[in-house]
Image (tube, rainbow, N blue to C red):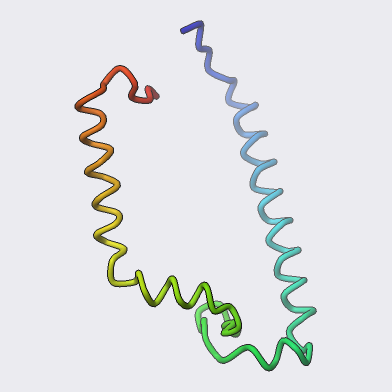
Length: 101
């Protein structure tokens, strides 16, 4: 499959620092946009108190999100187990296709 060479440590640290900086920068933009639009009149009508650990208000206008969450909340563990079981069966049946890390 070719030669696999490890990257030098300083290069890995540089990539990690750039990624962390980009994530912090994007998070600050999201937080700023959220804070700027908190007091809009159209926004106030469709939110209710919620998400206490974030200190934000929860949007109740998104019907589709609420429908999917309330419908499948009780079945999420079953769905995740199905994914794991399917993956295990597939790796046993076709080991040559399995991703190698």
